[in-house]
Length: 110
Length: 112
Image (tube, rainbow over all chains, first blue to last red; front, side, top):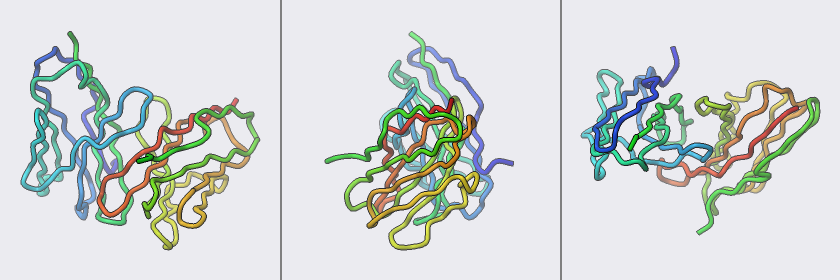
């Protein structure tokens, strides 16, 4: 089993739709969780960190369920510019390696 | 300020040749990571440097791969006797006290 698994995608949604991505991780000692975004042929960039209490940044909401070892990302009112691959990232803690999921590709269609 | 830079941006080489890829992290960042990403695939961890500690080399796929970080700043990833399966984008990232990694633009390596 891979350390970090994500919905295989791709997700093709119309503008304005709400879309949710799921991610599961196998290392129960994992401490920090993130969502990164990677545009085609570009480097990954941090979208948001994921906190135990859940957190929201504009149209983006991240949730963490430690008991189920599950992370989610919800995008509301999707825009064409949201089209990208979304990477779930997990680390055991500060100073440790980061483990990237395979990514879920999102295409927002006009 | 300046971000993470990598050079060259593209490298085409013949099978069996050695290549060196360079990464300049953000000034002051003590942690530096190398990943590779094959076409349509996720990021594969290669090696991790943290300050003066021994690097975590657990992701290096074979002994043809090595990396060093001189003076706690610039890092060089060396691939000896390149094979076609080494073709990928090699990404470098650096980090300071927060958990956020900042990635460079990558080096696209093509082994013919």
